[in-house]
Image (cartoon, rainbow, N blue to C red):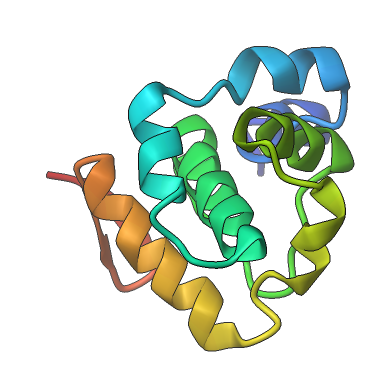
Amino acid sequence: MSFLDAQSRATLFEPPEAYEEALARYALSVEDIAFAKGHRRSHNRLGFAIQLALVRDLGRPLRAGEAPPQAIISIVADQLGIDPAVFGFYAQREETRRDMRARSLPLLGCVLSGRAITVV
């Protein structure tokens, strides 16, 4: 038995595909941009900002092997002044993705316990 149909579940738990919807949901704050710019390489700045935005919007970071919709990549990259194409270099190492997730959660007042994200 499921309380949500597939469309409702996707609306709540998956990043938006449509550019207009992503534009409304993935605006970075001045602080977000400053934290992202603390990373040396452009692909890590972009990946970190996307992780931060996903946790804020969906309550979860990128999953292993997941690539967000191109609309999100483009919107976040534009706010950082980065070429969206560099996202392909982000998290080629699993350790990078995990490290960025670990760094983004405390900025939102969250901790990762097991597989769940908890607000502290």
